[in-house]
Length: 530
Image (cartoon, rainbow, N blue to C red; front, side, top):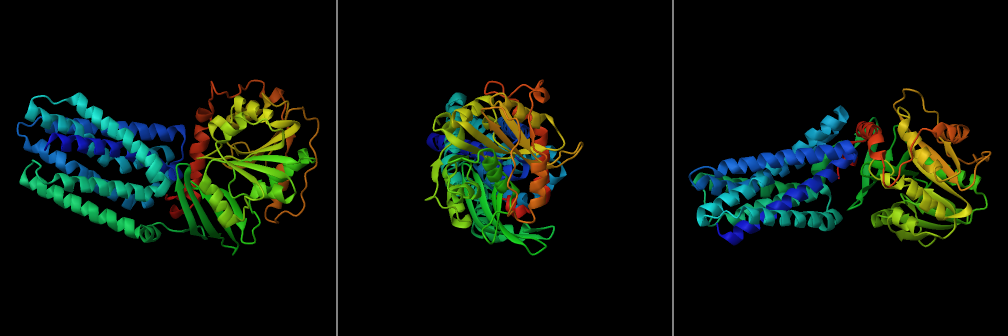
């Protein structure tokens, strides 16, 4: 093999290695989440199988004959392509079972299913090329080979982030990667070394990978519908729309309950963001809680800033009451689907496509209400739960303004809940929390609503409970009935989270793991596949 072709090959296979790691993280997120444990599993499994690949390549290079190394260099991309196609064929069925079994162990096993064989094959390429160059020139140029491979990895990450993820689902992106690797073997076949039987095997593997990857790309939707049930516990899910981007996979689904009730759900990476009935009215309790708690605590409000659009139900609730509304949403696809499927009207609210933390840091506009309704992965992002973020939010408010936040509280573990409250109370002299009772030893998760202000609270105002959907009224009333003022005494021993020291990832790790496992048990696989 000539020098230019060899370096081009390791550049492309190096790109595939990092591209696969990035894609794997996105494929696994709806099943296993984005917790500290999950990333530890992805990174450790990646390093383990890359190390095995380096060792394999080195072992094949030690043969006296040149043919084993040359044949392996030709064959490895085709084998990686076949492994990727095989993983795409099985993971929609396998991953829900692994997540339901044990999230931590399942994460390691799932990562191995996606990455083990491709990474072993592709990581062997660099030591194989070093060996081939040594036999030809007497100078393997190991540094040069790994330099070129690493540059390919950088290119692979950029291509995946800015091309694949913004245009294709992760399922399709994996298959396109397999097609590219299979084509690479076919391109290298003429004039390559290796034993005749190895060359024949490489040709067969490459053609098989090409055919199977193309088949799944062309018939992927039918295949997924056939192997991944759209029903669970009597509920039927019909996917109406799907958008993929660097900010996550967005799906709109029509959900039919056993009772006959129907509504549309807005899902991002498997987590439901809102549910809206076919009459256009929200059937998610938090929508009404955010609106009514806000207006109970700040009845004279005129200007509202909403962080996180979702289906657009919360900002439109304020618009209908005659308030001036600004919305900050990082994902432009969310704006598109909220408008198309849920009746959000961007002409009646000012939408800022931006990161919430950056926007709030620059905000000095005196809003009467600041609504925090931000979820990514399994909860509110860690960097939006620090004392510094809360201070920026306070600076965004008018003197008697209020922050109202939609949070998840864990009924089984108190430490994460107390950490969030302590962080808010470190900035806001007035803070109140509303949520259903957290039963000791429980295992569920509840929506909790934090209301915070720049002046101390002495009493809690009455909250409007009229005209709620009848199925939501009991839970709404229970949450409001258990509202209480947060006191300094109950948080005396809790250190707030800061940008410099933010333990939220660690403190929330067990809760996020259990939440994602609950999700895997209560959502059909078709909803989680992205």
